[in-house]
Image (cartoon, rainbow, N blue to C red):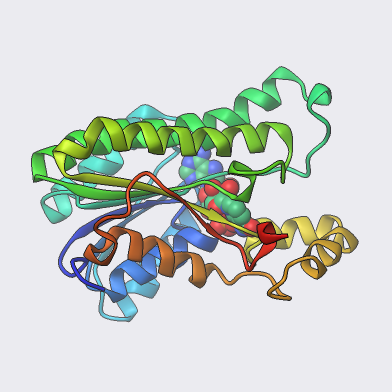
Length: 251
Ligand code: NAP
């Protein structure tokens, strides 16, 4: 992919699943990667995987609900690699879901704080550094739940919100040379979904049977899209929710 080589990327939720694969994919294309996650073991594992393949990566423990952590994440990119070119704002949580009137306020607040406000905190810290650099590219992880009623109410609300933020950022910062897009994964074979499968295997089998591709997505298939969106090959793709779902929403 064009334009990734020698760039600097930050990836939140980089210690597991989709974020681990996008960290590896950025590094394969020659970027240096700041891997950020609350999971220290997972984050270190990702950087070790990158380094054992000859890439460059640094782990920084980052909780996206903490503005100081997020500022330190961006500062790590500046201190270690001299700037920031790409961001995959991906850290997120899910739950098994119930009907919307049955959530209590604390559950609602936590989901929004991680999945939506967490992305905003990252954008707030990343954008000034990208302006300083003369441009950049950002991918925020939404979901098929960001464009449909798949997923529980607070999860769907958070993921719809991520697309709104992505569109607004596009309009606000196009003149600064920064492109923003969202990726909307379907049902992807990561620890998040594996946990849901352990909790309710019949439900996961039912969902899988309804995917036209006939299988769950591989996190690598999302990572390919994320890094492509950051590359010069996607130079005219701006403000879009890109759905990667094996045909799930085509029905
Ligand atoms: P995952 O394997 O659970 O990875 C998510 C990572 O984010 C974990 O390492 C998790 O740490 C970390 N994390 C959680 N809260 C955090 C916080 N406050 N600050 C920093 N890191 C945090 O999940 P995934 O499936 O790769 O999901 C990645 C993103 O894709 C999420 O935004 C998710 O909503 C989205 N998504 C996933 C699917 C899917 O089918 N898998 C579909 C659509 C969208 P802990 O494990 O310690 O909590």
